[in-house]
Length: 156
Image 1: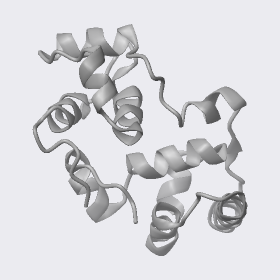
Image 2 (image 1 turned 90 degrees about the vertical axis):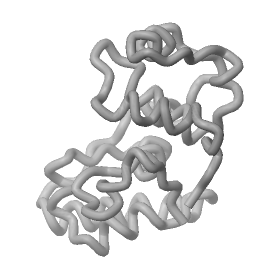
Image 3 (image 1 turned 60 degrees about the vertical axis):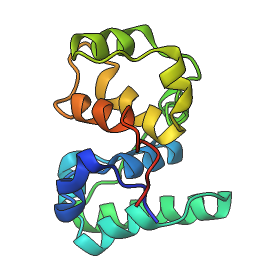
Image 4 (image 1 turned 30 degrees about the vertical axis):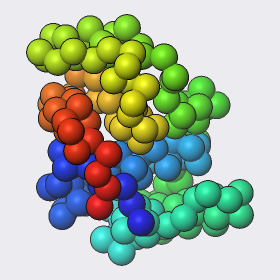
């Protein structure tokens, strides 16, 4: 089962972009799919990537092989391999990054160490991807609102 966030509702319907849970999985696998490659995959292939298990090394190897073969078949090019630093980004930091906290304040939200430590790794990963950059994503404020609400630990 894939972790679904409310701020990505339209993404799950169309799968026109990679959902956060799939992005985190690909980062952990060390696989980089471009948006053009993702868009050329069939809906079933996209769903498979989203929902395939990847907890064990055997599952990760199988998923990596599936992604590579499907991408080559659809686009003629293999996905890129991520450097080790990018792979490590699948595991968000324990400490709240200052840039992320600053961007949250600019969005009118107080994101402090206590709130950060109360979040799970999926939520932290999403916020890092959306807001730990000089120009936060358009989904950053919605993710903050969702994660800092009283039902922030709800999963579908």
